[in-house]
Length: 356
Image (cartoon, rainbow, N blue to C red; front, side):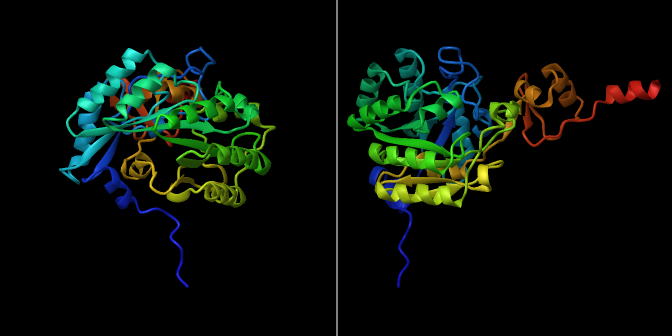
């Protein structure tokens, strides 16, 4: 008896859109989020630390063109004739004035070899004017919009400081799909306060929504994320993830016609499990597969690390300059420190104690 194939054939999918190899290049276009800048809250989502999944060439002090050129150089040794998708990844990539967004998207599409865009965003940041623009853009270039759904439970969304409701998610996904744009979503297993019953509720709602692609993440708590820094605030909440929850997600994905097509792991994931991407056959998300080939740099800035080590950013800069922080690198005026780096002992304290 033959074993059924549990994932879609990616090369076949790519040939539906392109007659050549395609690679995604991540971008940090300098956006923020409404729950980060004070519009709907401060500090962003409690689990978020965008810096940890940006490649090294992906820095806001560089123009979009420069980031793309450096990204192309990063991959060119493998396939010199490869084409590229500009992946607007960090933070909320539709959260700005329309004319400014147009300039950024069109700058990316003008770079030689770039044949499309993948845009990551929030459900509450897709105004009608922008959606109409993207609908037209979709007629001339490959386009996919990915929404961070995270949970369909409004209490959870409030707890993690998302700043929007699930009703806004439904509206955004339906409006985008109605424009003929490839539309996907992401949910997270193991969010604080959620267990198997909350997951069932979320998956029932996703089943009704029917996104063309679905990425199921296991919660990964980064060292500089609020969930870690202020862990005591959440000590009464469960962080539950298990084989049962992952299996349940797979079952529901199958119920809406989606099949698994990629998987990857991160450090500090709830239940020590993985992230799995599901898709309707023929609607596989290009960037979710291609991200497997990107070298992910897990770095913290001095500002982020100061909250973890409970020392000033100036002191961290001194430690890095003195070579006392393993793996620290300097980019312009900014120090980047691996999130696995250990806090050095305070030599000033030891010296004073010895002198005493």
